[in-house]
Length: 210
Image (cartoon, rainbow, N blue to C red; front, side, top):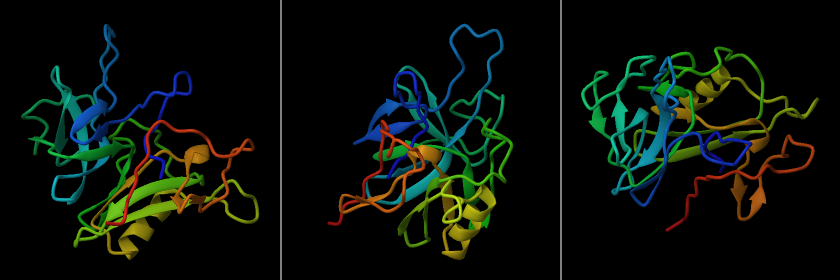
């Protein structure tokens, strides 16, 4: 399934990517030399060495861009190893970012504004998202959209309700629109919304059967 938001200019990831414990891309950070620095903790999904999933607000810190997770999102407060509250090193083996977080503690909790994203949560679009249940079962969700009269898409509130109805304790929105895709046995499960077909993306989440 597709995951991160990315730059159309150079196809680079705009969210964190961790593969086999190595940080390949980071969550948004202030532009170097910017007169006004804007800090955000952005939602991310990760799995640790034991295969246990987690969703948190994440910021990369230090020369090694070590990911730190926080218990709550923060906007325009520089994240450190101690702040905001709940700061701890995010020890994940695999991870991808997106945003906003949709569900926390089994309840809808949409942090669009706190993550420095568009304030509109009502628009219908193709969507991709990930969540998990208390037993660690991971659920991938892709919603077809922009297919008039067939599939109009969904908004964040609808997505959060689907995940809570399915018993998820946490859920995260990922890049949507023309990026949305969920392949099962090499077959896409939805009709791409771009007229040119499925959009190439720089990072994906792959689940394999053991």
